[in-house]
Length: 275
Image (cartoon, rainbow, N blue to C red; front, top):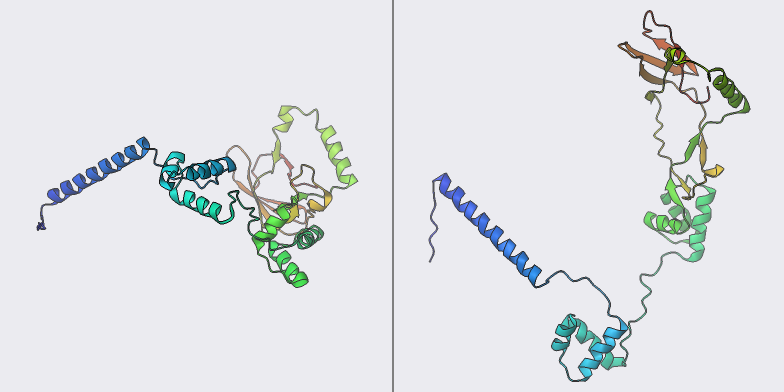
């Protein structure tokens, strides 16, 4: 019987652990080389075609054993056995037609989901599932709703946000552009642009999604109009070079600048749309 010897020396234990690690690495590399040389890989599940099925049955009818046929064709012996058993039962070796998992919804219910999603584009998949359950009695999951609407190219996406520009806005913008079209770089050097980070004091996560297609053109019903609601916001910006931090308080389209740099005369151009 082998004896278990306890070593108090730390170096002896470390050397023993290193030797075991080397042996494990050698065994792993040898096993991989054996698998590579003998082409032992994990087989993927593939169905036999009709030609290979007929070839298998022909060899079995000639008196070959199932083990010999499986080795010649490179198939498992259980596959050959099931194929031979089925041929003896009904004389047919063709693959049976399989419809897959039955669908939960009918074509009429899929049409109902599509019409409901197009009428109320901001409804969630859970809302559509509840409406379908109350209307038809069929209970489906959110993933089923996503797949059903995906078949007709309807996906939950963020809406396009635009500003309601009137004719007056467009005319004023065109006039401003024409007036400043011939400005020199020296004149533009005194202009301060406020296209910096804006922090809203009210929650606007823009997580409201709509059901829309993936086409290039954006229809009007996939667009959300953004209107200035008068809510307060803070915008931080710096005037280069070496100036103090300025805080812009935007309330009802009025600008309040704090900490204006002394001795500096500049034109403030707001990056807010619709101004």
